Length: 312
Image (tube, rainbow, N blue to C red; front, side, top):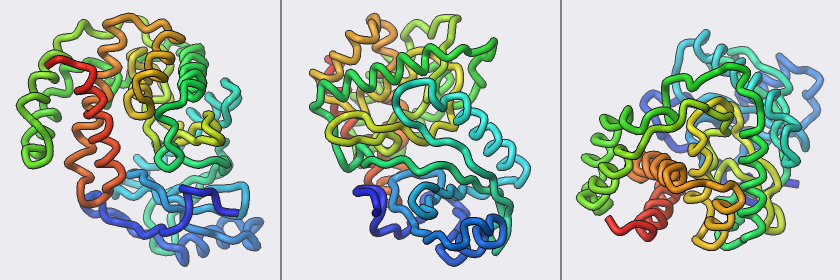
């Protein structure tokens, strides 16, 4: 049976320049040719608000992920291999289910890149089963974050790209966001807020492991509790505040405070977490306003929560 909020109208919209197209016929052919043991399993495209992969369910227990952005074949292969390693490292490290890597497929049937297969997790994404007022869900999320932080970095450090390093490194991107948001947001106020965020003390020299993208579409809910976490390929060392973005993307004030208390986040770390959520949301609002409205609306909601929590 299809999971509520994750299947249905799976019409793919164009979100990126040169976005790749992949349909059911292509996936059926790739699966049949490369993994004949699954020929008898039905394939269904999954409706997701994600921006990086097209998702197809294979039978009851598997999901195939196809990168949407055009890229060099070997670069994509290395990325998929990195995601597989990350998923294996996280598997079983908390009591909350995460996907298990199953296979990596090759280009074919007109699709030019490698692709991956992983286990399908039951549950409804938080985008559809909104847990914003659940203190119990806030406790679950804090437990997950604490469990990820407990994974040994094994000497690894932040990769130097994306969120999780130095906030000031994102000045140029934020300027792009402000210019493109003038018709959507109160940009003068948001500029003032960013100036305060970027002047926060940097993250400590000791980094911890983070999921890196705790947005509603990557969090599964069942009966108001955390049922699993997906899109785990970004697992890696970063600013300990990075996973606090989930507090702002997913929770209202009471469960958000509960999460903070459980994690013991001090003022500076909490503000940096808010800053990372701000940076992510500013990009989502304008970039996806037409191509992926749920992502844009997520950014809007998060910014509203952040502004309600500040006097700037």
